Image 1 (cartoon, helix red, strand yellow):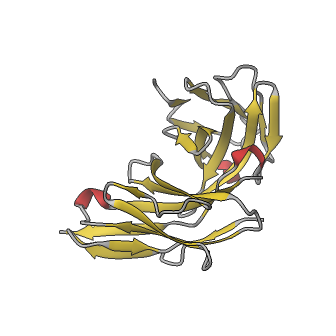
Image 2 (cartoon, chains in turn orange, green):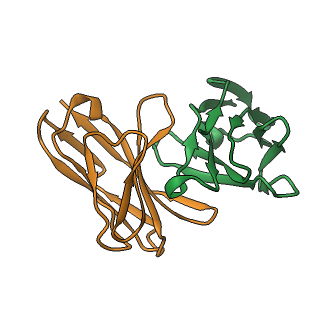
Image 3 (cartoon, one colour):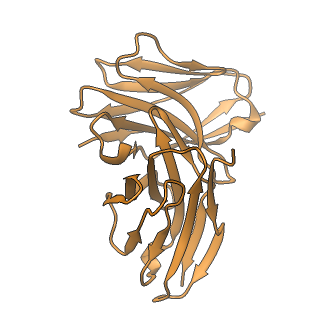
Length: 110
Length: 116
């Protein structure tokens, strides 16, 4: 099992550019979510999914879109990048009391 | 609403000694879970230990134990026999049974530095 994988590991964008952060899991977990971590802080929920075709907003959803066409994949799209979106992004999947995180994507928006 | 508070922004601990990291929580959910994660300088989130609100005994995982005091709404992490590799950020988190999407709510973290 690869667990939760994320690509890319690092990304630099210019203000206004769009991009997609990829996330995949091979544990057949129903729940997947995206968090962001700003310097010196804990993680905050952006969007989550409770299964293929079902997504909903978390605490800080503005500026991001998600979709869940398969159980395995849960991409996060930045529509028009802003410097305030400079952060480390974690994808997670879980079932019951287990919650697994991907290695993170460090995003810088100039 | 759920809230996690970690009041210790940073602490030093001598190698081979035990350290306790404080975590208090607030929730109206009668059933919930409490998690601790370690985040080393490399950035990944490493799951350490889980405690369910109805578990009769405090959770233990190797050198990690969770001192769960439900009436006081605290879930402190105890690391015994600290090692240099324990130097990292530690996050307490909780998930209510009713939490949408099994969302985790995180505290602000505690940075631990183990001294040789």
